[in-house]
Image 1 (tube, rainbow over the protein chains, first blue to last red):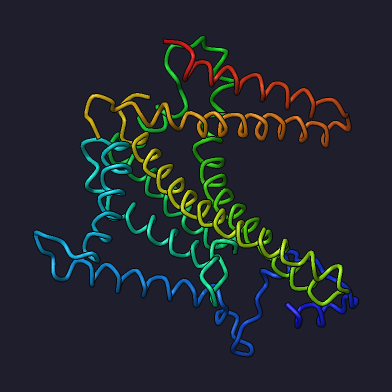
Image 2: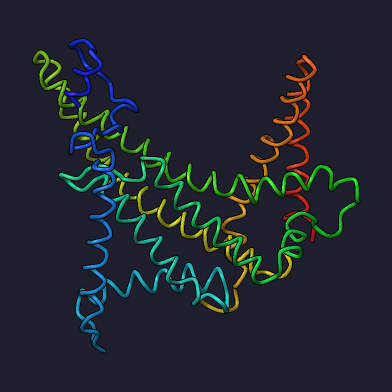
Length: 262
Length: 68
């Protein structure tokens, strides 16, 4: 933060946090891949692997606390997101949904973990890649299931409407399936994480700055910190919700591609 | 998880489907209108496109969710 302000040459007073605060410089000079978000992604994979390996290693009929925690997450994704949404073919997709959910969840929650405190998904490339996976998977599933031409016909021609209306409707359906779906999927996740992190930065850095002011400002500072803490809990909720929504919509798109008729 | 309510997702998430249709309506027809404006040096095709897009998106939403 300070180094960034010095770099840009901002003046002495309070510099409100902005998009530049998400541009973390690489910690190995000259290596653009050695940045905090990349490190966090690897850390998340390690943490998730360790957690679920430990949770499932000594699977017992009467589960330990760890096993219970792991199984709760798994059965939540399998039952509430897989079976409820996709239907009888759901088991094929549970591995992907489960990976997606845990990966996004852990990377989001990094935003409020002390010392880490950066939501990986506030760098837009990560949501883009995840949305691209979902995009290719649900189209692939649909094409495999129905054949390319039938699948495209399903998308483009809604049955039972007058012929001229297709001029209006078909471009919309195409745009929805091939443009708007992946875009909204990634932007929703990105924007939520970006805005949430910025909000926390405003209140906590602002509170810190108030502390350095005159006595009157010092007295206000605790309120800024209090709001910062309250927002941290709020952020936790948003982070979980966004992981859930991303996975839910992925399941919905797969379900839509599998369905024979809309 | 009761098996007699399999339609839960479509009820629950109609919101995002509708949102997607509205957005693509504005983007596609608004985009076409904007392109026509650029090409013909006019100013009203963008507005016409946006309205047409909104209208057809609403029509599509009605087709999907309204009629039974």
